[in-house]
Length: 386
Image (cartoon, rainbow, N blue to C red; front, side, top):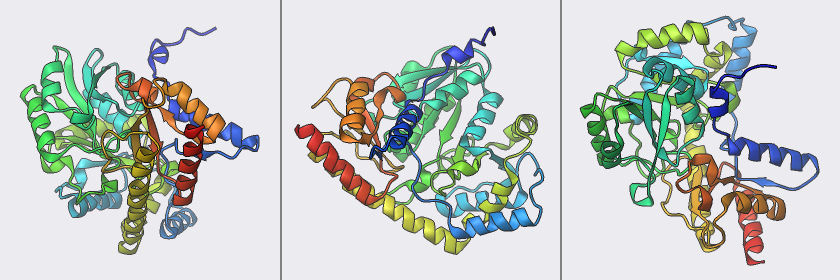
């Protein structure tokens, strides 16, 4: 028998993964299930990226890179942030990681001491709490309302900052809500945190999937924010396990040292392949795919509203719709289970994202083809009418 570490009992369950397991099991039984649960693009890496992977593999480029990643890729990421998100970032501030998970692990370990408290919005991506706890910190979920776009703001930071609070972890656009923090609200939040000498970790994984204007990085407002990003969502490379962290120069030696010991480096073949993502013709493909996601959002939001699944705040990014189901139920676990087994539609219950709205919220992912979205709405309409 083993005496498990206490942290294993503190780790939050990941209901989206549990839904994914159920979907897989039902499909193996021959059931026809449409999954609007897992947040994974239905697109895969463009052909040029796959070709670059093959070229790198055949050329023997599979050895370790530097812990911070290939110099060419760090430069490419820095240029991407300047050209697309308006942020001037030197390549030396970019560290390539094993997905955004690797980036957040390194950032948390570099900044958080045991007992340090980190403020997060409720609702938010559930795994983020676990990175904080893994570093010995205490995630503190702050209930956020639709009037706040389900995001932390300056007032909630000021009201909830305590003697052990060291920083905030936020996301824009957010999972599960698809909402972004508006620039003025973000600047006010930054100012409140800076007054208290706190850190800001900003998850920008879905920044490339912002639909209502030209996206800007939080780094435009404050160059000392720690930014997390990934090749998984906008670049459609979920299983390639590649991401990055952008940090102030004074943090880079500590993060680089941690990376050398904990990861050695991000997958090198994935790094070589990712260089092709930034070719102009490949970026054109990503822009076309982004437009596909926008069209899906513009279909699904009114379709859900029409069948009585209310959308408190229209998402302006990512590929999620966060709905209020109180017209039908105040038990999202039970309701999502019925949708899965009686309507053949998989969604994620609100319990995944924090307790504040858990009982009456569902998250829908529109990272699937339009005809599947239409069929899912048809099935749910029939289910709700019955």
